[in-house]
Each structure stands twice: as structure tokens, then as C-alpha cells.
Image (cartoon, rainbow, N blue to C red):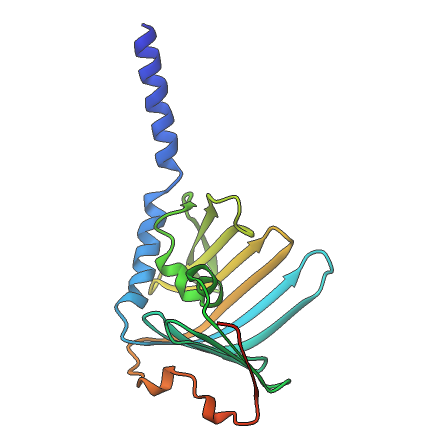
Length: 214
């Protein structure tokens, strides 16, 4: 009897562990991620918003993200960020300054919102999705909770348009009270970017101060 009780307890525990990753939610994420994986190049019009719960302050900026494989160019009025697969170039026009660094994979994920589309397969608890209707659109909301307690955010939420499986919004809830939201306004897939288009050209900014911290 004791053995049967232990076996039943272990089976119950195993089912709880399995339930931490809901397969319905994963299937939705798989469909959405395939949009990027199968695209030769993607261009996204987006709005980035940052809200600070501690100060009550918020700011937002519109921009364009061009991405192919691991390369991306994020252009806003504040800065242009260009990652060529190895090095990251950040140009800030207000101070006419270029910073060059070699970021880690984790740092790149924080800068390119499409990277979450390829990093959800491990390290997250993913409960069953929530389904809502907004402005006549049927939407799935998938939440991801990092298993690593060292992460600086406690939840990541992804809104998916069920009519085409396109992502509509990606929101990261930081432990410090900062909420970062990326609203995806438009997506164009299968763009044919040239090599030059996704590379940073230092010659375009001959008078800029260059800070190389690689």
C-alpha cells in the first residue's frame, strides 16, 4: 500500500510539472515563430513604450525593425541599433556618438523583440493561453514566466492575432516596476535585404565620436 501511495504521489507530481508548459500555448507560439523562421527578411513598424510604476512616468517612440536571421537594424528618433551577428553599433544622433560592443545572446534578445520567437522553448513556465476579443479581433494572450530567478523580469506577455497568427504586442514586466511594451503596427515578410542594408556604415558619420568597447 505504501508503494502504491508513493507511485500515485509521483504520478501526480509529474503531471503538475508537465502542466507548467501548456501545449496549446506552445502550439500558438510555434505558429507565430514560423512567420520569422520562414521569412527571408522581415520589416516591422512598431511602437516602444516604457512605463515606470515607481515614478509614474512613461515615454514612447515609434520605429522600424529590419531583421534577417540574427541580424537586425532598429531605427528610432532616439537611436539606431545595428547588430551584424557579432557586433552591435548604436548611433545616438543627439550627441553624435557611436558605441560598438560585442553583446551576449541574452543582451541581443533584450534588444530585438523577435528573438522571443525562438527562445520560448526552454526556461519558461507557460500556462494555458487566455482568449479575448479586442476591436472585433479574436486574440490569444500567452504569458511566459522565467524559471531563472536571476532574470530581471517576472513575466512576459505576448498577444497574437488569431486570424493570421501575427504577434500584436510583446510586454515585459520588470521586477523593478518597469514595463516595456512593443506594439507591432505592421509586419512585412520575405523582404530581400542586401548585405549592405543590414550592415552599419561608419563612413556615413565621419564626425561622430566612436566608442569601441569590444
